[in-house]
Length: 206
Image (tube, one colour):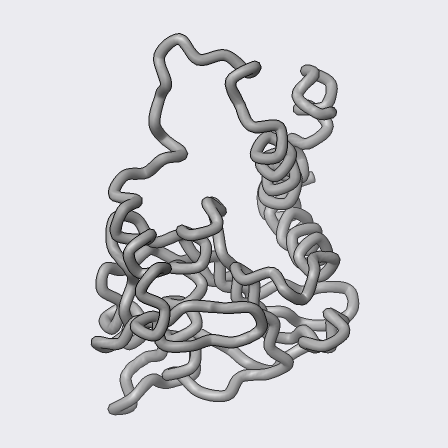
């Protein structure tokens, strides 16, 4: 398998894994088709902030998925040809509006059941992510203004470092929260499916 084929296979597997998640997952949003450039930016802000609160290493915005059923239905949306406001190219326009820009990667996935566009979004770190001056958050099924949830805003500000990169001297696996370990394993299997079997063989799976 070539590197390109391996990458494509990983993305198809990622879509399938995300579609199996609960509809109440606050760091994943499914859309059937493209609506507006503004909406994408708002969702990136909301999902990045939600991922921070949930200690999730990534958030995802997917186009080409039926929201209610999580069925792959395909989309004609092309993020590389659509325009933002002022006829600017879509992705640079979105990037310019994100402060701070959490970082995101866009992929077009040729899934067997239809074409899917995937935004893989880094979590907010140290401060909430805004989009053209407004802060958003995902609460349950809804995207809303973060200012309406001051306790969530304070929690994001309090997480001022990249907790996933920190080293705890003297800590062992026995010091870890079993629930957190389970969640980390599940996320690892979603984002690194080709390594999940190796993880199990090495004794990291339950």
